Amino acid sequence: MKKDFKEKVEALKAEKEAEIAAIYGEEYLAAWTKYNALETAIEAIEDKAENASLSDDDIAAIMNLLGLDETQKDALANKDGVINVESVDRYLDKHLDDDFAKSEAEEEEMEDLEDSIEDILEKYDEDDYVLTSEDLTAIATAWGVTADELTFTDLDGAEEFLDDAEEALEDLRESIPLTADQKAQIQAILQDMKDVKDTARDELKNKIDEMKQHFHDFKQGKLEAHGFGDKGGMR
Image (cartoon, helix red, strand yellow):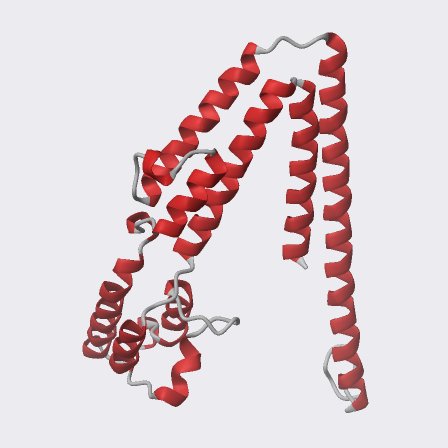
């Protein structure tokens, strides 16, 4: 539900930003479209780097450290069945909480175990992600150049390149004079964007409230069916 809201807002934002870009003229619209394609390509790579699946060898090593067998492998996976840094961290938070250690020795043992697993996960740090040939091709295609013309090879370099492109786009926008009518058009678009976003947020809140109420009514019905009142006491 929240994902749907986010996607709806992002689609609205892109649509309205395109309308505003068009007001600045063809040159700016072309530059904005090019930048938008670059941003989309790099964001997709960032998402891939952040959610990279662990190798079979690393999964096996982690399972061995945790004492898990093949039938328990799914415990390390996320809801999509993927084992990545986030899903392993979630498992550790749930099953390796040293607050429940019965002794200082047991607490140290759990901390050492977690450190060993974190050492394995370090290689999947998003900041150390090296761009693949496919990544470079996607960026180059979005920017309208060849991969050989790109001067970076890692994600950090790609993000710096995106920042520079954004700054150049901002400079171009600021260099374009607008009439009072054009400024009014932009303000109207921004207000429309805000109104639609607020409406979508209200709809999301209402749906969440309805679900909470439905769950409460269902739970209350179960209690009453077993002879319990609203406070949980016997009638």
